Amino acid sequence: MRSELIDDRSACTVRRLFVSDMHNAVYLITAKASGEQILIDAADDIDALESLLREGAADTNRPATLRLIVTTHAHWDHTRAIAALAARTGAKVAIGRDDAQQLLEERDISADVLLDHEDRVEVEGAAFDVIALRGHTPGSVALATTEGHPFLLFTGDSLFPGGLGNTGNDPERFAQLFDDVTSRLFDRFGDETRVLPGHGEATTLGAERPALPAWRERGW
Image (cartoon, rainbow, N blue to C red):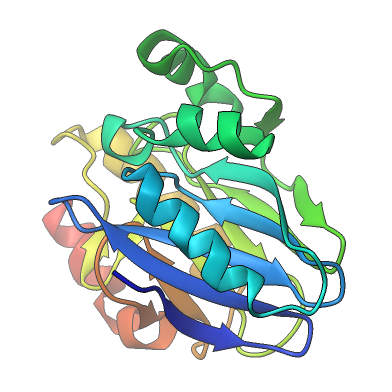
């Protein structure tokens, strides 16, 4: 199983690997100038993730080092390989503040970095804005590139092609997620912005924007 190079920029590369029977997307950002890496959602299969790191290492002429494992939210299918990967690499673990307790209770992992809305996540040569998208879980976060075009949004399970993430048929949770996605993603970023979700294929904000009224009407 090999990763796919889905974005190659002057400063960094982005690779994607699908793992598990739930088709979880794992993303690896490698900064070319420093070799420092960020992995988004260590969902499963530690051997596959280590292979992903090696493939990312080939994108830089510097020694590659995984510095940070960012977890978009604490649901079990996105967290299965965090402990093993952190132990093998020494990388720090980051998660939204309001999901940290679930990660601790379910995986016995105490996050090194608690993420809040408008924080920044960075290694030498790559930086991302943290965007809280509450509703799928209380502490769900997305990461957004801060330079280069098109912008990239790593949205976890909060935004997919065709709709929002599951909010448990709870109108309040849906309204919160819809409002966050609308104001913090669609109102901020242009149509060419690429959406890289936690399962399945990518989309763009432009492809999804016309459906916003229908999503609000149907409530999911």
